[in-house]
Amino acid sequence: MKIKKLMFVTKFEDLGFDAIQALLSMRKASLEHIVFMNVIEREKVAMQRGVGYKKDEAVRMKEAANIRFIDWAERLFEQGMEVGVYIQVGTLAAEVTKAVQKEEADLVVIGRTHKTALEQFYSGSTVTEMIRRVSVPVLVYKPVSDSPFATGQPFERPLLATDWSPASLRGIDYLVNLKGLIEEVEVVHVADQKDIEGTSAMHAQKTRKDTKSRLEELCRRFQDAGIAARSHVYVGDPEEEIEKAARESQATLVVLGSSSKNLWMERWIGSTPRAIAEKSAFPTLLIPPAQK
Amino acid sequence: MAKKVLTVDDDPDVRLFTTTVLEENGYMPVEAGNGEEGLQMIQSEKPDLIILDVLMPRQSGIRLYRELRTNKSLAKVKVIILSGIAKKTFLRSQQALTEFGETAVPEPDFYLEKPVDADVLAETIKKAIG
Image (cartoon, rainbow over all chains, first blue to last red; front, side, top):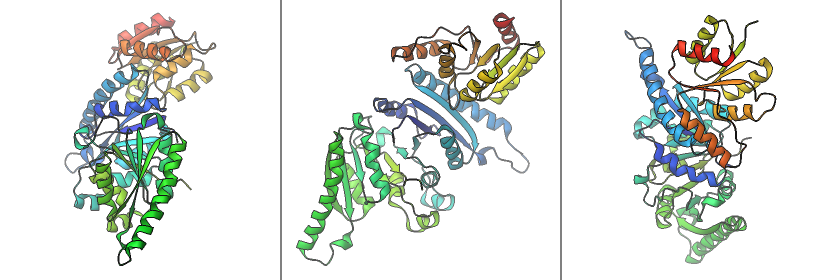
């Protein structure tokens, strides 16, 4: 699960060269190739009554993107990095999926979307669509100014939130490969309020102790790999508690296993990883379940 | 027999441009859309000259150029770099890779920065392979 090649998907207003500079610390691990991608949404240049396909507009937008990418690529080439570029007209999630397969990328980096809840419901959130389609982890990068404890090194103090799902446990293998970049990992589980409601204090303490013990096992996997790790148990709403845990531990990144719920279920009942990826102030790394 | 020239560029407009210039000047054009495909074509087509872009999917021209110059059987093939990437960046990147422990490679025979006039391209091709 080494990250040798990352695909940097940008609309320019959401992700810029400052994000790439922060991610370049991953060279200490194994990063050697960055592929830039810009997708011009089809509706911006699509066939319209009385106007037709706006070919000139598509060419203008492609050239504008190309000029930005050439400038970024020059800076990376000069540091000995390998760089590639895709500028496509189409649907973001579909084009990114195709390019990830073609390039065999190990990580996709995207910016936060700014759609309203209603728009997300109708159009499907970019993050959800992307996670559902690509088989590699997705890092939802947040601008440094949005992250309370931003150090410019997103992998310095990751918080791994686990619900014991296989995808969240895969996060351990992923982070272990980034050893040289990590100062300490905070491993967190958010227990369900129902598990301790209406029971004795002793029962609640036992729940906490059992959970802590499971978390300690995960911490040992990090410690065995030479990475400091600390466990924490929280109780309540996962979305709120993970954000709280990230603030309290001054995390630089939240790592979550992505859900395998189907799209309609996610749209109706929501998804914690998706909600955190889109709303949290912290950069969020979503790890997909292993491919069958 | 016409000399064979391979264009390696992901932009179909650029490939069309170079193909037209090559045909008008009596060369035989062949083309590839990225570095990996380019390397396969170089081995199968054995071109006399390669017109090589730098910023491409799958494998950049910087890497492909390095592979050519460090492969004994391909090291003598003439190369024109035709790219939006500045020549000084290309040279610095090769220098950075050498500093990281990779084999040092010579400068490309010819370097043209996009956009390029048809006349300038034709003249450079002629200088390279006659």
